[in-house]
Image (cartoon, rainbow, N blue to C red):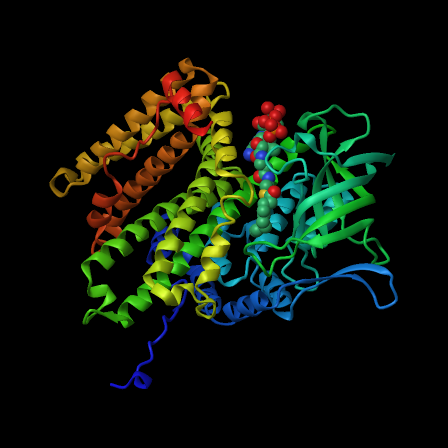
Length: 570
Ligand code: MFK
């Protein structure tokens, strides 16, 4: 064969819903049959769009990044941000497909969030990060929903949750300043009272994504308020005034980011920007935490969507590409690599969809106290875990393509570049690990969380006995998980005796251990259902690889350990 005769066939993507076995299994496990039957045609249709028109718009938007035009031809300061037509199409499709609306119409009651997040999971990897404006729109909607009755909040809420593209709004989240993204206590933006709930804000918001949104929620310090984060309040900020001009907002420049190139992220200067106080003075951080918890879940669903896309590309390529006389999929070591990354994806998906379900339960008032505690504690855990896994899974999958994975017009490098933002966007790994510690440090939270997990393990034990599971290994898996859980429990109950530094130094290892143990618990609960509902599925193959010794990887950073770390870094 002449070298001109060989062309490698590229990987192909098929329907994001029907090809994602685990997404479908999870929904089947958790949703009542009639609800799933009702929404499945929409999921199928959206799964097709995710790899057809939405993917094309995403690629076009990526190829045409936003441009900042500070002045018009006559020298007037206009600060326009021009976005591509494709970016505008992604806005339209988000409204029409109800990507925010589904979560607030709540037609599927406690399962509404699950339905919505199944769509977001498919949307994200094709959307050139339109998922980011959606995340903030959703977080803002949740806060505004809590302020129902406030005319400004009601109007904005209606826009954020609209299915009409002409009415649909997205939102910014203006928190990060030059003084800090993780630590907002040094926020310098001030709020001058104008009467009633109206204020004029002045300051610089240093990392403001979705700058083309119609509104933002942001933090500022009311003149005379205390220093630190307890002096911050939350404000609703319309981006434009009634006449259409910018609301005292100057776009200093767009950020030249490593990835997320289609997403306009700017440095903004606020100069007497008109704003409305939301909630109580000095409660800004606590109030905006509602938004953060939603955007963190978006971060997780985007991470899982990104992992799934990379895996789907490799699965297809493995069938087509030949090396050393065989297709990639016929090489045992390649299969090992792929299987390992699929398991990482599976853990991430279980954690994310479970969290979406817990959120849905809370929003319709059917979450038990332990559901509420799990939702709070697992939000940072899921976010930090899925973000880190996204980078490693996508990187490993890129490597499966060899040189082709490093070439821009295969559209593979962008997956890795964009994945890197997950661990930064909406809270870095260490900040989130400390957030878990914040939750576990409250009253009896640690004890209650452990009790609810222990109770679920007990139920699994009796289910294993009830179905004679010992014969096919289910009860061995439950025993293994029990041992890992007990190690985690012992650690949590004893760590508090060791002092603040010990607890903080171990926080990351605690968060990752909880993620691995909780995802294994979810898997076994699903397996128990699946052995009857889907008897031909290879549950044990997954079980043997997911539920293993060593899930609890907590470190015990006593004084000597910490002194060693100090010596190593100094
Ligand atoms: C898509 C691509 C985007 C483009 C690239 C993006 C690049 C990155 C740009 C960024 O800057 S992203 C960074 C976004 N920033 C964050 O995610 C903030 C990270 N920091 C935190 O999460 C801090 O923990 C937080 C600011 C929320 C709080 O720290 P503080 O100032 O020390 O507050 P404190 O005193 O611990 O908490 C105040 C209250 O809020 C407490 O309630 P109480 O007063 O009742 O005790 C906390 O319990 C509560 N709270 C804090 N976090 C909470 C929460 N409540 C519920 N959920 C939470 N998550």
